[in-house]
Length: 152
Image 1 (cartoon, rainbow, N blue to C red):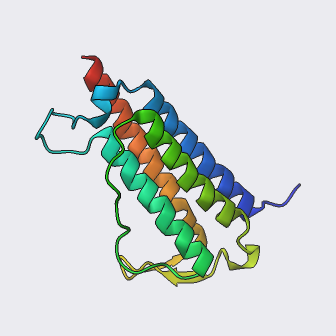
Image 2 (tube, one colour):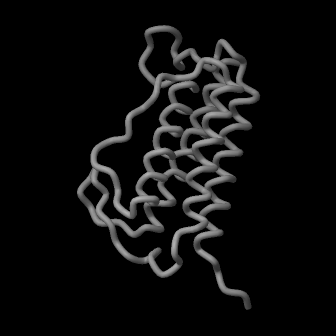
């Protein structure tokens, strides 16, 4: 039986989550991409907002892994990119930068703890690497709902 390489596993998981969210971007009509679920002025994030949040989270996490310390505070969310293709490119760049950083992370550190500077809670580096995956998967689910609403 082969050993699991945690670094490669998590890097692959990050890229797969990004690819799935980018697929959702690709099938979202342009006007629906920037429209909140209930229309202009309605509560809830648009698909462009969700992608911007994921870009920000991936950049924030890459910084944490490069410095070996989670940055303080919430990641700054950039202005949403209105064009679905350009937003997907920004997401791919951010996720790939994180995946490359994670792929090079030392195996012996995955189970060690750092502090999530947002919550103040201890987390393992593996948990911190998985968080952007979870958020991209959640955003993809929301994106699929937004697309169905747009199709109505």
